[in-house]
Image (tube, rainbow, N blue to C red):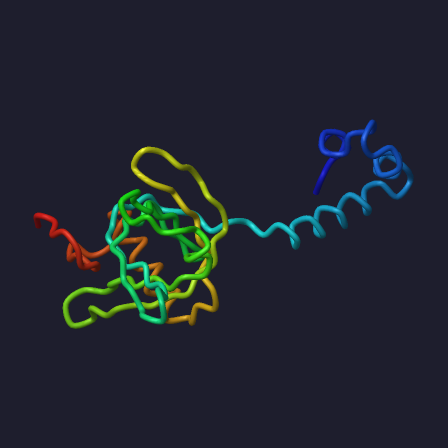
Length: 172
């Protein structure tokens, strides 16, 4: 429930005089509650991201051919991930607005390659090492979501001691 003090905080009377007056009027409390529900539906909470430094493949189409580039996954959640695109790859952002990523997930006999489609959400930063790009996953199945959840748990140190992703080996 949003109290009047909180409503005054996010409804600036100078910018929103009618809404602010209504929020403090006779039907203010139910209106504030409906506004809170509306805004919560429009801005769902972001899935928690877990920092990582695993290797994945960025799969893109170049001149009609599928090309895989190794990239570093900086953090991952059940809704997306942030990667570093190294400067030496010299790839235009226009080429990778909707790429596919190839992640190795699982361990032992359960090791498999997970291919997930994604959409560029934002350019997080650009520096001398490359571009940090945030992607949102598209149309994940329940099993893909579970595999990413397991990968997140492993990365956070909560899962198995076996390495679920191929790439540089970790000492066990």
